[in-house]
Image (tube, rainbow, N blue to C red; front, side):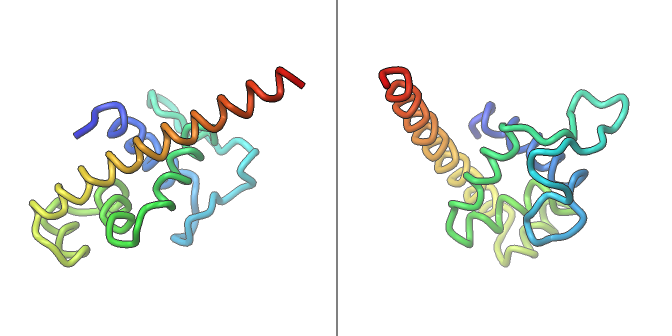
Amino acid sequence: MILHINDRLNKWAFWCLTGRTSNIGFPSKSSYCSLEGRGGNSLSAEFNDDAWEIEQAVQSLDEILKKAVVEFYTGKGTVEQKARNCGCTKMTLYNRVDSAQYKIMDWLNGYYAEKSVDSDFTEMV
C-alpha cells in the first residue's frame, strides 16, 4: 500500500460519495462549483483539484483495476463482499488495489511532469 495514494483515494471516495447523485462518474454539479460540505469532518466535499486528479487517474486504469478501486473505496459492505462484487477473492482484491495504487502514482507523476513542462514553457514565452 502506498500511504499517500491511499489517503488521496480515501478523500476521492468521500468526494464521490458525498458529491455525486448517480453512478455514472460525474459530479452532481459543475466541476468548478463547490459542493455542500459536511460539518465536523476533516474531509471536505468541496470539489478540488486533488479529487479531479484522482478521478482522472482512476479513469485511466484498465476496467478490472478500475472496478477494484471503485468497489474497494466506495462500495458498501465488507472486504469479502466487495471482492465477490469484483468476482475475485479478498487477497486478489487487495492485490488489484495495490497494483492500481502504483499505476495511479505513475499517472500522477506523469501528470505533474507534464504540468511542470507546460508551466516552464509558459514562463519562457
